[in-house]
Structure formats: C-alpha cells, structure tokens
Image (tube, helix red, strand yellow):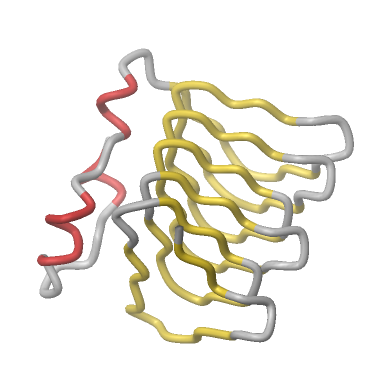
Length: 129
C-alpha cells in the first residue's frame, strides 16, 4: 500500500501518481491519482482524475472519478464527473456533477503499468471508457 501523508502537498499541472497496488491519499494533490484501489482520506483534497478499481472518497475531490466501484462516504465533498459500474452515496455525502454508469466494468479498467510507461500522453478519459 502506498500513502500520501497528511503533511504532504503534491502540486503540478501534468502530474500523474500511479500505484500498481492500493493507494491512500491523506494530503493535497493537484494532478491525476491512479491505483488498483484508491482511498481519499477525510482531510485530503484532490484536484484532477482519480482512477481505481474501487474508489472510496472521504475528503474533497474536484475533477473526474473513474472506478468500477465508487463509494462517497458521509464526509465526502465531490464536484466531479463520476464514471462507474456501481456508485454508492452515503447519507451526508455532497456530490455535484454528473454520473455515468457502465454495464460492463471492463470499460472502466486502466492498464496501470502502461499508464506509468506512457509518459508522453497524459491519461485521457476516452482511453478508459
């Protein structure tokens, strides 16, 4: 498991953080965050794309979320477009944006190894959906 701690801020326009395993963000990230499973902590803030098999949001997200399973916890504050196979909003979660459901979850899977190698082309929404 990889962790971006609460004392860490990672800022950058074309930044991509890619983990082959589980990734937890407790700090601030401006850029794309991708992992097998991604957890956005209660005090975390992410501006960019979040992509994972399962994405659990406790904190603030602005941008796009792509995941087979997306769960917005009561403390979540999300202003994003969400592409998902299953979406669950817990009572208290705030969500503004659009939601698009996919019947086939394979349309939402990203080859993380290829994304890490492909430094010339930033990950585009259309590559994964």
